[in-house]
Image (cartoon, rainbow over all chains, first blue to last red; front, side):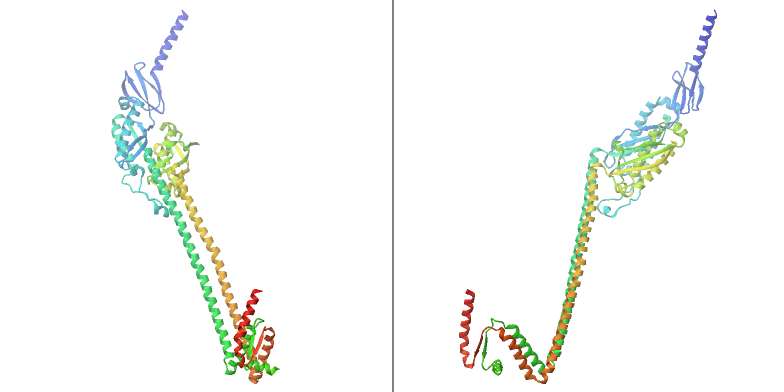
Length: 314
Length: 236
């Protein structure tokens, strides 16, 4: 009997325990809970953490995230307004703001994510297709720092924008939020994570960049050649100047010296008639001395002055 | 301290559009630490992944506002510091409980297919400097030497001038001395000089022929004879 009693008590305890276990549940800091009865939500959402109770068996506790959640967009190939094909990859942060609505409209997170895909990808497509590429890339009208020579050859400045990346992101977020308002979720932030050219476009951009760089390189080379030619020209000019100035100065010096020598000679040889006589005499004597050698034949006439001298010697 | 690394090989992650619609390959590292564990754990699901998204979006925002030239050269440091500010601002907005410690721009390169042409620009710049330096070297080799040679020419001319004047003065002084003697006895002096000269030159002379006035007609014959002698000499 005792045994049977004991077993009965054990069963009773077990049943009570089971009921208690089924009725109590824990809500942690990260979660919020909706109580449903036969699938219908009962009462307000439980958003504070702690040990909670529900009617056992009849009611279910449905857990939802309370934290900010991520949404990662699929990279979409979209043409911009100026017909450039780009891949746009986006992300968003969102939060379950009304668990009851969320539960009714979306059921669980998978439903929410796929709904966000529809809404955000759609809004992104619309926004990209209605703006020029540069509006999606730039976020301000900042002035670029340019490097002289490069700016001379390629367009090194930044095009000004009307709207810009930040505002387009905000517009998408706002439009999406209008559509998620009755879904119990709020999009907290939406951003373009990645915008890249489609493969085909990328190749043409590479070609453009290459041709721009080649033009810059050509300019550098041509500048070098030009500057070298200028220096060479300067060298030639300087050389001619130095040489001709030296020539001029040397000739001037020589000329002055010749003139001075002439005036010295004149002052002596030309001072009297006798001096002139003597000079021409001495010079002709020197000339004899210089022109006569052993090949020379002397023919002397007997009436020449020279013969007279010779005669007188005899 | 946690680190989040990004490397090329993340494919499209490092390749991005610049403000002038070119492409640049940018690699960076974000170092962060959790400074508010409550927020980190309870405010956001997947905080690390979120930071990754933020950092990518922020970097593209910064690069999207700059020219490719700025990103690759002059503006590198600025890109890193701006990106750090923006990342931290978004992190705070999201309440990730994260503090960005350091944001390092590891590499900013032109995309691979474009790299050779960017290197070509650097090479061309070097070539320009080389050409200019060579021309300058040439200039410096030629001009100082020419200046020295010019000095030489001038000095030579001055030497000539000195010698010319000194010679003139010397000759004149000699002449003047002679002249002062000559004035005293002109005929005697002349005769003396004449004879002295003859004395000196006659021994050096070959043939000597003396004719008188009437003998002038033999001169052409002599001429012939001497021509014959010349021919004979040449045959020898």
